[in-house]
Amino acid sequence: MQLHSFAIAVFLSATLILTSGCDEALDAPPRHPTPIGEDRGDVVVSWMDLTLDRVQADGLTPPQTSRILAYSGVALYEALLGGMPRQQSFGGQLAGLGELPALEPGVDYDFYTVAHATMGHLMPLLFVSDESRRAFKDFAEEGMQQRAEAGVSADVRERSRAYGVLVAEVIDAWAYGDGYDDAMAVTYEFSDEPHAWRPTAEGMQALLPGWGRIRPFALPAANACAPPPPPAFETLPHSALYRQALAVWNASRTLTPDQEHIANFWADNVGASPTPPGHWMRIAAQVLADRHERLDRSAETVALLGLVQADAFISCWDEKYRSNLLRPVTYIRDHIDEDWTSLVSTPPFPEYTSGHSNASAAAARVLTEQLGAFPFADRTHQSQGLGVRHFDDFQHAAQEAAISRLYGGIHYPIGIDYGMPQGECVAGHLLEGVETRRMSE
Image (tube, rainbow, N blue to C red; front, side, top):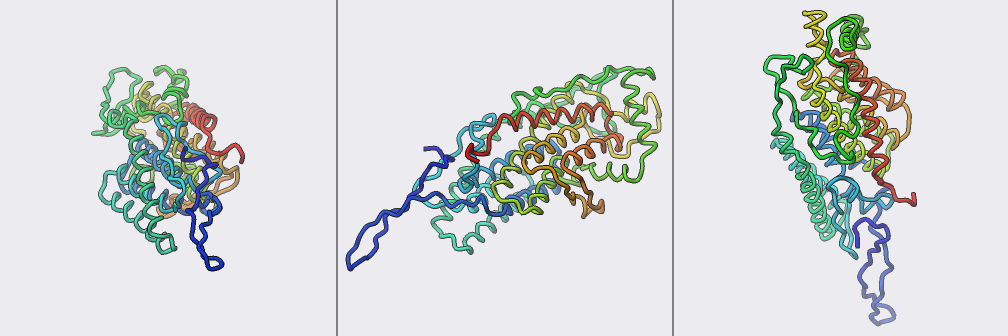
């Protein structure tokens, strides 16, 4: 009997009832686990908010953040699945993930307790700082205590806690096999080729050159959405790459105050924000909370968004270190203006393609498919003095995130122009290859 079949019936044991002065054993009617899918998705939003806070506090990189958001989103979804009859498991649909553990038939579960137990066990395994590990454990304990105060019996809570730990262990084993340790051990070999990326600040080291080797989630291969190659390295003023660099230089000299604000709003630097994939998860959490979305839709949205961001960064990093294109600041200083500098600090990895453009296009497509197109406000950086930005829809926000990299001076137009279709392609593989809703919906 499989875990997530809505056809599974859970039966109450026969109860002895006194009637007409005699004992009579009556069979209770069959029933399903208590559905919670119609509840608000507050538990989903609160766990994602905590995760993003810890990502920022620990200074995690964008690729690392995307991986954590993928595994945590799937774990939370699978933990709640027994109470979401409209949904079906990711088991057997994502690379390396088999069927999830089955619920014990004939007994009750509290799926909020399952969720807190799952996340309280898994998240400390995905983070390394003691502060983050304590934060996740404390949050989980608080959530489970609230379920006790809400009247959930001790035996149901213990059964649910044990099942949640089992789900977490399955997700952790799945994550362990994705090649993370090997990818982290890859070193960058500097090249003397004129087109090759080189550090843009003293002491800079290449960030995660092996990330493209991480096992994708829904992509058939890291290069499944590879863009066309960038322009050949040339320095003549009429050459394609020279014109790309000149476009960056010209844009930097005519920036309006709003364009500068856009560049800073979407900079999403490590330690100052939850990074680009975290920024999009923060947008999702805000929208889900503002719209009072039900729990099943919230859990599904967070899981799919985490997955598409993770695949987008695998796809992007695979291309970055294959084409290995130097950054605009390097080309411009060598061939156009030796004193030029970018508005936004140039990050420590090759240019092509733009990761923010790629991931933003992927995120926008998933969020639009999930929630629709509507105006929203992005308050991600309000506490940092960058205010609130308003967008017509997710696509509008993705386009602004992409162009922000030109305004910031860290990407050629072509890195943006090919980065967005790359992200669209990544999203297509996920949306077309993975089913999360039952056919009856």
